Length: 232
Image (cartoon, rainbow, N blue to C red; front, side):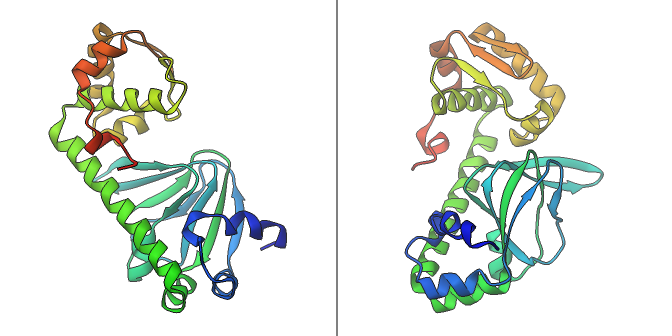
């Protein structure tokens, strides 16, 4: 790793407050690499050689079973994957690939485990990271089990609009197949859900979505901060 890259990495929240000596030892044999799109970084069932951190770009987490594939998450900076496998020294339960040019930090798994033992402040940040991941899973499960597909899509569009300019102009960064996987739907059901949302002011032009009647859409979606607010 080049010395010019160290300050950028040092500012990652996971390493906040970490002792300099522990940080330097952890980064031994690490890599900070730029990957093009569609590079598979890890494969489910393989042992965890590295902790990966998305510093720039986008990475898709996905899985296969019975000749089916689904998208489980799309990670954007700054995000780790897959920390639990690294800490347990257990096989990956998901695969990951880049969706666009991405800068990824790769730290040997044994370095992470050693740093946890050596540096209590790092251990605390690890616990916080795992807690955030767990709460994200709970929110996703609540949305999946308590909402219809149409309601999940409506809430997704409302969240994306709120994170942007809030002007009702939404651009999907995922293709429709990946979005369907994220929302626990088939592509066909996603298409039908967009059709249902037309009467609630949702206009679709490729990946560009216009929300012309946000109040009606919220009336259908019934946003719930205990599901939709990631800051809680």
